[in-house]
Amino acid sequence: MAAMVLHHLFILSSCNAADRNSTTPSAVPVLNASGERKNVLLICVDDLRPELKCFGADYIHSPNIDALAKVGTRFRRHYVQAPTCGASRYALLTGRYGPSSNGALFSRAAKIEKGASDVAPSMPAWLKQHGYTTVSVGKVSHHPGGRGGADWNDTAKPEMPLSWDRHLMPCGPWQHPRGAMHGLANGEIRINSGKMDVFQSHAGDDESYPDGLILNQAKTELKQLSADDSKPFFLAVGFIRPHLPFGAPAKYMQPYRDTSLPAIENPGKPSGTTTWHRSGEFMKYNRWDRNPNDDAEFAIKCRQHYAACVTYADEMVGQLMAELKTSGQADNTIVILWGDHGWHLGEHSIWGKHALFEESLHSPLIVCAPQASQSGQAVDQIVETLDVFPTVCELCNVPAAKTMQGESLVALLNGDAKATTHQSAVSYSKATTIRTNRYRLIQHAKGHIELYDHHSDAKETVNIADQSPDVVAALQKQLKQRLADRD
Image (tube, rainbow, N blue to C red; front, side):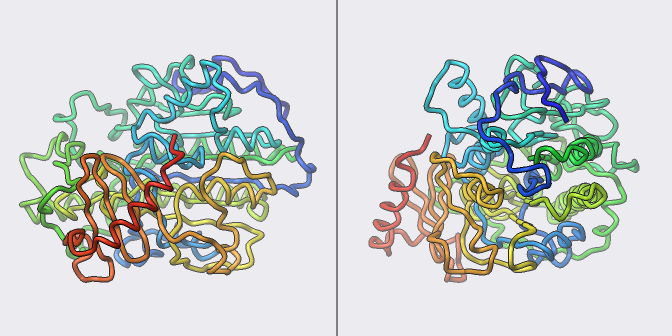
């Protein structure tokens, strides 16, 4: 496939455009045309809790992600850097601790546009410089399709300059990426949140919601990339569900209509100073004047519809994996499935993310590498989203970028549980937090400290900071050191 120069070219609709900076030349040639360098398929799933059957949630119907876990490695203690989409994806795509806002990648893009020489390369840019074709479909960066502007389709405002050969978002009846991001069935766009239902189960096919279009475009790109054996590819595909509103084709609701859900753990509102919030993103939708915090029946319905969205996303993953197998590239492709953060379903009286409790920061990570010596294993060592970039570099035989702040997980993929130095994970939002095997410490800007002991039954419901000054001091020191070079 010949290199393409695509300036402001719309490929599918007004919301599909190639990166306007895609003419950056490859710095290092590929090894050869026979696939000595592995391809990479990165699958990003929005707002996905580690509530999958392969992670221990027996009531969730997730056969395709479970199948991926059986041939890969699932990291059961993976933590994101931020409980919000844009900042979490910044960490994934740059390998660095960054700003805590959803505009993190756009801020980075502004520095590049101004000619700053000290901006760390993104993962796709780095692979591109080392001979890869890089393609993004759906929500990989914060905006699906990676554009700014009022409708997120302004080609003059790329979210990730210098990164993608093609950065695509099929929108269909949703008209533009902003419409698709919060779209319900058959082109319904969020205009007034209060008039859009918080959940929906529509009797339509997969394409009646935006993820069906994302899947179809991803399959088309996979076919095109697989047909070119002169270069390896990095294909990133981002599915929107189970992000709000919880809309999915009705067939994916069927497994949950008569299923008994486990009780919500720690459903009470926390006392004292915490990062608890009023679940504003969730509460602004039409809820028929019902509140899941005091309406148990409604809470169950919300959880069922979230689960249906998970099963819908799982089906999208399954069809994408089937296309990879059909392409003949499965044995030469590293597959990574990553959830951009967790999501509270009533824990701590929160329905959403944006807090620094465990439920916001814990998400699934599965890595399936053909060259790994172990498969089907579960790793319980703490790892971070920052570790994905260096892991990809090592698996692809690409030198690690010096700017990366994580560490490769390849030794863990090969079964060496003591190979890495990771003992904690750091995250940030309204405050900063560090999670170790035993403790979570949260440090607020005005000095307040939360400390929770995960070896106790209370977990993150009883703040023991006042009773554990030595633990607090040690973790504060670690947290400060880890964030000393934060962007």
